Image 1 (cartoon, rainbow, N blue to C red):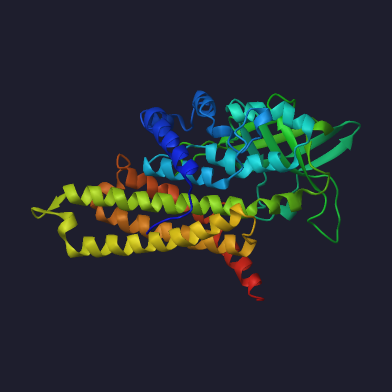
Image 2 (cartoon, rainbow, N blue to C red; image 1 turned 30 degrees about the vertical axis):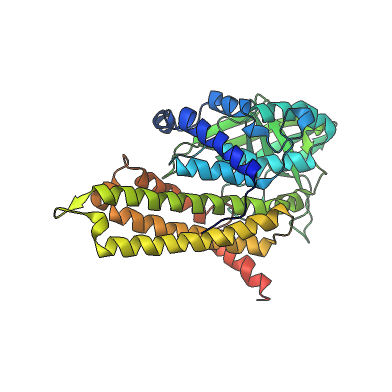
Length: 382
């Protein structure tokens, strides 16, 4: 279906992203998969093109274009090439907004040039062992001692945690027995701070080009000058970016589902069964037609949500609806496309297998499908 979401500037950016991915990412991707991460020099190369700093103000070396549609284009082009950009998506779409919204001028001067250049890598440490989606249950503590916070606790499932230079840590600085959401603060822990340790690098079913770590903090002295925003206000800050975080998962889901269909079309046209191309069978045509229809429906819903997000009108409940629908659609479509590959679809040498394993987490992170349903139900007055 015809899309009206993008301008000429976005399409020019698309050409830049497509060229970079084809030249710098696709040839190196097998090595990145074996290493379990995208190398630091690749982030710097991406930064040199200007793509890491599109949303960062020009005075700090960025592009001064805080338009979420550029992020959408970058995700779509990566999916088109059957690759992912590791923790780039997390840095640009999940973590950078916290710096943009809550960093003061001194922090901007200190961190923004490196973020724009792709030489400062980031992570956000929310999830703790045993807490899951319950951010109000955070047990990591930060006690004020003069001009430093003394940070203690542990975090898990931290995307990009093994390479991060800056880690935004959600910590409890005070306790209100009547409101568990009060008293949470965002502190930026820097690589090399005493007491900050990176634990296990967690082995995942999918998303292989993306390190996921356990982090621990033992009496880490974090300067007050590394606090993002006001003390005790982190819960509201985290909620502020949830709509975009969920939207970015949906963008990836739709783009990857579309790529799964294209991969299945290419495969079934060349693969023969009983002397006939698999694409000529009625079942193949019907399956791909149904998958295409699902993707187009999700794309229309997603594009409307992106347009509303750009103008600041996307509600939390609608972001939940989009994430729920698009991620569940991705699961159905990728599974049906893999089936058309037969036994070869189960082999990791075929990109469809990676699309399948990567897709599973989309219904879990940024809020599970069940959490999305709770949010939607509340919006219905239930």
